[in-house]
Image (spheres, rainbow, N blue to C red):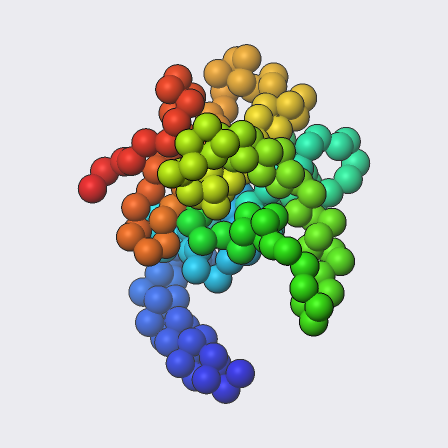
Length: 208
Ligand SMILES: [Zn+2]
């Protein structure tokens, strides 16, 4: 804690905050983020760093496995975050940001062993990833050279996009061309980002 306070917070306050005092003063009155990011809780994923963005730009919802659950009118914290972003902040763009080496997706293939930690909430939450696992298994069945973990991570992004499209207020905006939805997959080891192409239904590399 002392290290966090001394080297972390003090540095932030004396350097970054000092340099951006005006920005923080403006942000204390209002936020107008241009993009919502739904990403994994994984410590290796840092959307602000990845997009070189400043405070106030990104509205971020994080959960294990960057999942968007199915629409339920009055339930769910991710659903609440999406609802607030779209209906209260009028966010014009939502990015589902998946990633390589995702423990949540890998856990879908984990054979339980004696001595494993009890993960009751995790197991329950990961049920949201079952459709992505099924889609990945179907694809690997056809071509075993494919990486089932990467496929699950990518299908998981696509399934989340599909679910977002079922949210009634997002459907309304999509019809009016008022919102854009994107699926991204970030490779931790190489820094590469691939974006889902809705026409080819595949992930494609962007800028070098
Ligand atoms: Zn993850």
